[in-house]
Length: 212
Image (cartoon, rainbow, N blue to C red; front, side, top):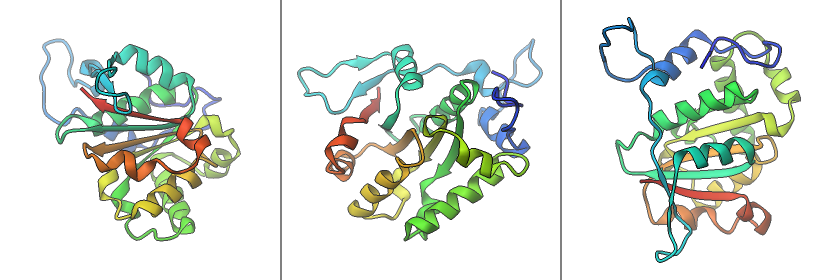
């Protein structure tokens, strides 16, 4: 996957620090024919379980099926997994796929929102993260994109510092700007109860998955 330029007339170019973050494998691995391995060279997608399915009807979701649906459908994707299950690495790969498909993703660690106790502050945080992840003065162009082309990837959901109502308000607000919202969280029984109850329309567009 080429990370240098966005397919949409090269308007969106990743910053050098973001390119390094997205390609970093996290540990030194040597290969006899490749001088420097990148994440995309070695990554294998995990399989997933549907968290809202009843125990007797729950089935694994194959990674190729998930990626196909993920690229095609908008909505909120809530994915949880055990510690060290590769959630951040999975977000990096999602970013790579979405960027290649002419979308513009923003990666955001949820702990950055601890002081964002208003939606305006959250918007300012998103703007700052965008400007650190993309080159040039392109944020206004980003805002002019269709919602379907804008994606936000939220990591470490459990570190947000937001209460149940705050989490619901945040997701509800973000859906007005981002066609696709991906949330990564540590496995916890309270995750689904924290999110469900937004409203019927939003609930129909939320997918709960667990890394197998």
